[in-house]
Image (cartoon, rainbow, N blue to C red; front, side, top):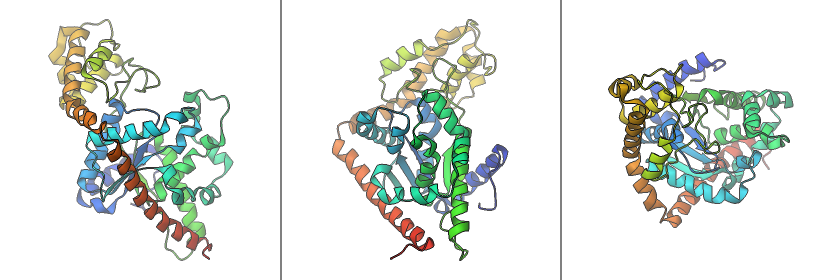
Length: 358
């Protein structure tokens, strides 16, 4: 896919469609890099927005690297005391959702892959301060975190993401539209490294492309912001059925009793309808017609039943995994060891290309 350039969202969409079609035919041709920061347990926005897709790709046979970005928590969070526990809870969420670690699926924290992190220094020499400062995703994250003093780690966050993607030669990254600037920085770093150091015409790094999510952005129960634990508008995967019912009961709707699917004029109602649709496979318009004059009460009742039914197997598996801390730790250790082997090979190639071998 190197002949394509993702210089615009429309171009990224077209490339993503081509990759999606090809993955089904040639899964081994790709390596997916995806992951999360260990800032807390995952919620239903993660489940519908990314977890289901990770399970799908791994079951297709696509080599999948699932990164737990523990170092990146330090850029804008003070909750370092909870990183270890949050890391283990992420693994439990992954496994409960259906991800199966093994030969083709690795789960690891990047603080346990020092060989990969050594790429940070040469990569930093390939970008300017101005390029880092202009990154719109970084600006949005600084604003969202309410940071008054911004550490250097936040500005170099896109470079660290490039390390995470390129050390394993990931060529596909499942992202939403808001993450495209980060991925473009990774492509830029790969291109500049290859142009500067690979004069023999054999590039070390691929230029990765986005696999854009088909799932619409999941709004929180307040209906106005993206679902987030920190905003208090999320339903966690680990919540009980009663807790789920109580949270949905408080969800915001509107004064019109007749339920219609109108995302522009009725975003709160539309969001709840979309969540039901994601659980049942029915179109949100069809669900709205079925509810009709049943009002917000019937809408919330239907969502509660659909969501609890969808998550029941995951939650049962989650309860089992909570009692297996040694297994969870072993998954992380095995993934880290395999990731280190991959990173060491890449680091050797990088040293060779930069004439640093001794």
